[in-house]
Image 1 (cartoon, rainbow, N blue to C red):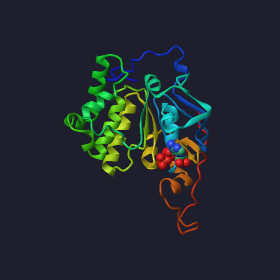
Image 2: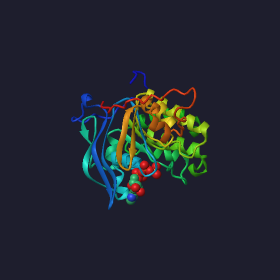
Image 3: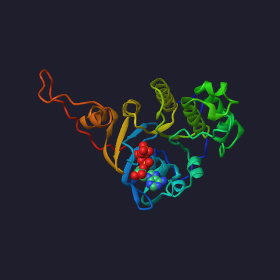
Image 4: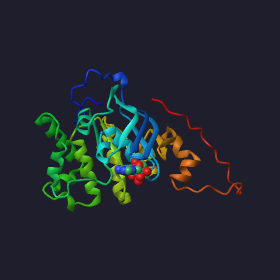
Length: 284
Ligand SMILES: Nc1ncnc2c1ncn2[C@@H]1O[C@H](COP(=O)(O)OP(=O)(O)OP(=O)(O)O)[C@@H](O)[C@H]1O
C-alpha cells in the first residue's frame, strides 16, 4: 500500500497474523444447506493486494463461497461440515460476521441490500459500526464520498429512492466505511446498464490500487476477467478451472460458456486452428 494512501489499515494485527501468511486462503471447503450440498471441496487463494474473480453460472455456489468467508452463512441456514478459511494465517472459520469484519474482511452482498427507508448518510453510518475512533470513521467517510460524489449530493435522500447504480455505489460505500483490507463483491454489476457497470469496474480498479484486496463474484465474465489477475470457475459446487485471468479469457471453454463467443466452423476457409492454452492450477 502506498505511504500516502488515504485509507491505511489501522486495526491492530492479531498476534496469530503474519505477513508471510498473507491473503485469504480457502481449503477443501464443503458447505451444506440441510440436504443440499452447495460446495464440495472448494480451495482457492486470494493473495493480499490482488483482484481474484470467481465465475460460474446460476447455482454454482459463488454466493455460498462468499457467505462462508464473511461469516454470514448462518443467516441462510448453511453449515460447514469440513474445510477451512484463513486470512493472513489466522483461521476465520467459525467466526460470526462482526468478528470477520473486525479482521478486515467485508462483503457487499448480491442485490444491493441498502436500507431503503434510511437516508444515504444513515446507510453509510451503519457501515462504521464496529469501527473504532471517530477520526477513522471520518476518514473513511471522506474517502467514500470522494469515490462516489453522488452519495454526498444525495446524503439526505432515502436510499430506496436512488437508481440501481447509485444503490450499488452506496452498498460498496457502506462496506468501505468499515475500512476493509479485503472486499468481497457479489455480482456488483447485476442488472446495471453497461455505462454504470463500467463505472463500477473502474471503482473496483481504484479501490484495489489503493491497497484493498478484492474477491469478485461475477456473471459478467468479460468484466471480471479484465479486472482480475487470477480467476476460478465454479460448477455445481466445485472448482473446474483456475488460472491467470488472461489465460482463462483465451480458453475455448471459457469463451464459449462464459463470454458468449461462438467457435468458428472447423476447417472453414482461412480460419487457423484455435490454440488451446493449458490452464495451470494456480497457487499463490
Ligand atoms: N439458503 C439456502 N437454502 C437452501 N439452498 C440454498 C440456499 N442458498 C443457496 N442454496 C443452493 O445452493 C446452491 C448454490 O447456490 P449459490 O446461491 O451459492 O449459487 P450462485 O453461484 O451464487 O448462484 P446465483 O448467481 O444464482 O446466486 C444452489 O443449488 C442453491 O439452490
